[in-house]
Image (cartoon, rainbow, N blue to C red; front, side):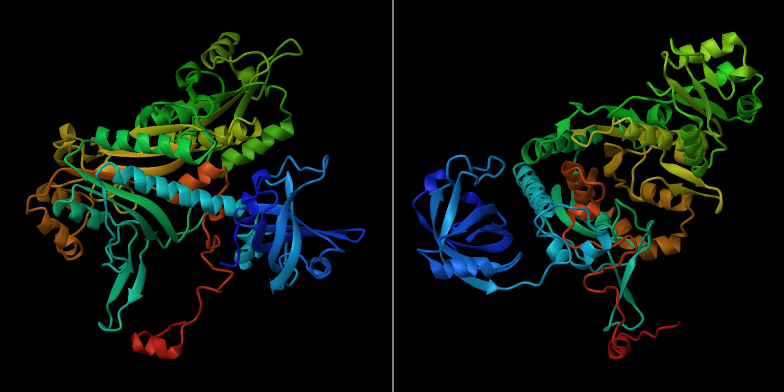
Length: 588
């Protein structure tokens, strides 16, 4: 080894010891002929000093080095002079007197500071990702990810799970997002697909009798990017046999609590995790991904304003719509400009606008965009229904339920952010259950699965597949943390007849179904046990534990929102000879 100790591990107990260190120059300072260098490795930072008399050559070398030079240093640990200790540094009570200094590699001036977490354009960070990853925050994030994955593996192995790898090259069976296709050289004109998830394979492992499977699985989806999406991502893939929904939810809840407590300093808001039906989540929060760190829940006032003189309200109710709102505490002094900003936000979500009422307090009277069209009694009833206090701001949207939910959900999140109610140090976990099994596709006049093709209906709802598919509930469960869908799963169909019935309901031709999923259908005839699973996203979970705004901050080498690798220049053009071998012709 080129070093005997790590920089960050030296303490008072090491005083007097000779050590050999190796790392990067984090910072250097020359104070009147005495050179100070902060040497950094993965474990932390230690201060080096030079002795111009006792070790003149080492002193000369330390005065010449610059940030990010790679050094090997032989020296002796000593206590820092009294009064010059650094309480913010774990090694702040000691320093190393350099006796020999060797430059293992010089460095150009980096395009941004490594030793401090100053804001840097993300494109520049991604182009020089290997330098960005040296920065303390990114080192913490990647090491946190390692700790989380290790905890998951240890937790599941201790509970009888077997880790099994599944193929990366598989069959294209479109189930939602676009597949990434890989051409086959040996089979001209045919393609493999990178797995969107190991869904079919983990179910087949249950047919194979493994009963408890897991994998830290790489998944690939060719879809538009956003802060919590990447073309390739990692999930904890998990499947169990002979279980019911409650068994998986209890297991994952125990796992998440353990990960949070063992790997982070986050605070869990709820234990056990609340369980909301899909209908309740929409009613209270306007979304099936509720952020439960704060209240400000949606309230329906449709019955109070159905016959009022404000046409925006009364006409929405008459057209089978609704009027719902939120009470924003302490924001009754919002200016018209601030309210106009909120108006723009709800319009982006498809609503016509936001109606508002500022509840008067001691400082003034009630202000409103619509109160003059209502009687005093109606205004009082609205304020009472909203449980508003003097100084609060009431915001309403009138439209069809989907529009109202979408607009008020975004409005609630925006105001929660402005009011500091979305504390990243707090994790509010909940389960959402009892989703509809199908959603009606108006464009194609058919049913779409709300989760995926293999989700089992709630047992008592099986007859509804023949009579009223839209009323059937799926045995699906989503783990939501701070408004992020962190994991989704379901009890699976394990019966060929039910699976074929679902294929028919979603308009999948049976010949096509057999070509795509024949291996699954045949397997269901060989004694398939009842089974189910879930797939929490590792990237999203670590993002939440690290308090980061998007998953790119917890992935070593992520793509941009345009799915590009700025560091390596991917995707790139292929050599014409490669294309010829693969029997591919580019058409522009």
